[in-house]
Length: 243
Image (tube, rainbow, N blue to C red; front, side, top):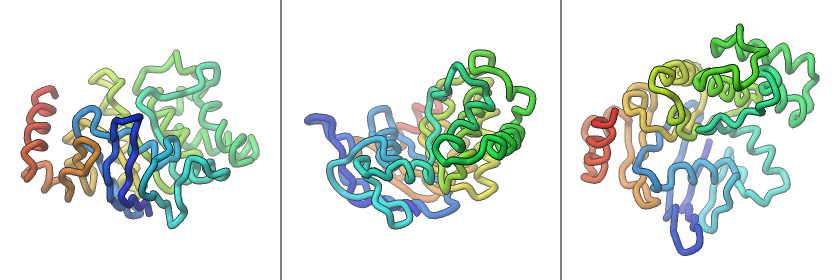
């Protein structure tokens, strides 16, 4: 579904992505792991068309992703993104945040979008919080609203950029539970995360990035249980120690 070919991206003289090749199949859950600055978030933003890349190619179902395309918004509808810091509209309720995209981007009627928004918020455990504003919600609840907002656009895939890193430890589980349910329903997901247990138990594959390159990849349980790359072994030891 998503194909990345020899992708390169630089900020000035600093090469952030250096010859990335990867494919994500429909219904697959892929976790991107690696140290800070390895290019994980930049890779997600290139897939979504939020960042321009200099070399290589990204396609979604055969359509080239290019941030300069006039129809880039169409690709963003098909490949939604959930950010680390929620990015909710503070002056709108949870339900209004969810309804915004379908109404103003897809042209759905307010009545239809509202009905579906209520159903989606209920599915992520927020039936009682629909009329609350973001500042009235916990971080975990805000992130679940952000996931609901992405789902409201009926995407073919969702990109998650460290969706739990801004949360207090006790709130992480409620967000991961929603993501686990999405995986069970067959949603295609690409996830930047430091939650190794989640990556091991929920994702199909893991890509380990270092210095803008894929240093190791493979089935999650195999790679995370018995990594071949020395740098990845060291990374896993440090992440496990922190957790």
